[in-house]
Amino acid sequence: MWNNSGMSLRRSSLAWGALAVGAALAGFLLARHLHDANPQLTSGTWFPQPRPVGPLELTGDDGKPFGHAKLEGAPTLVFFGFTHCPDVCPTTLAQLARITKASGVPGLRVLLVSVDPERDTPETLHQYVRAFDPSFIGATGTKQGITQVAKEFGVAVERVELPGDTYTMDHSAAVFLLNDRGQIVAVFTPPFDPDAFAADLRAAAPRLAG
Image (cartoon, rainbow, N blue to C red):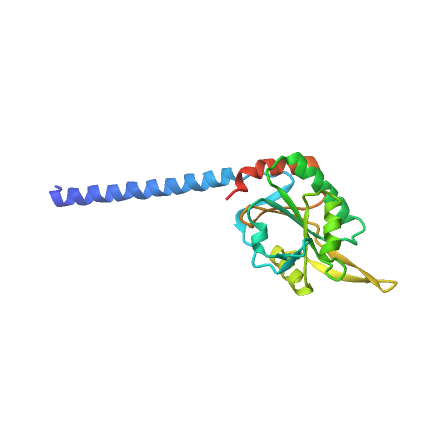
């Protein structure tokens, strides 16, 4: 036969059990909500968690220092390339000009990070990116600075010597999507379908603002 003390203990155990079940259910529902809230991309990969980008020591195409703060305040598509690129870079930038317009994402920028500091001065880069769209921006820097930012994004870069005492640059052709806090939230890899890419950006737009 239960005494009052035993009955109180049983009620207490049941109450704690109910709280534990409730907490577990709440955690499950929250995790499911966060998962469902992530945009479902058809042409890119959305990261489960935003990836921070470390300090940058670059120079913008306006000749001014370009640090991490320049990546904040608006969503950005980041592409690594160089002005002497014969095909991949101009093709990609032309596609990005079309994609950004079609997406309709407010404030969306395109940043070209040069992997060729020897030839890409800020002035050269400025003229090059503006030829694709007046809103495009560029950044260059020292070899060390560019190596560091490429490492931050996981981009492979290699100088390839060519006949005639010249060279080209081999580099990854991925396009990275950053939120307005300068964090990497998605990556798109070629070949790019401009229509699908633009649709993915529209789907991602609600998650790009801090």
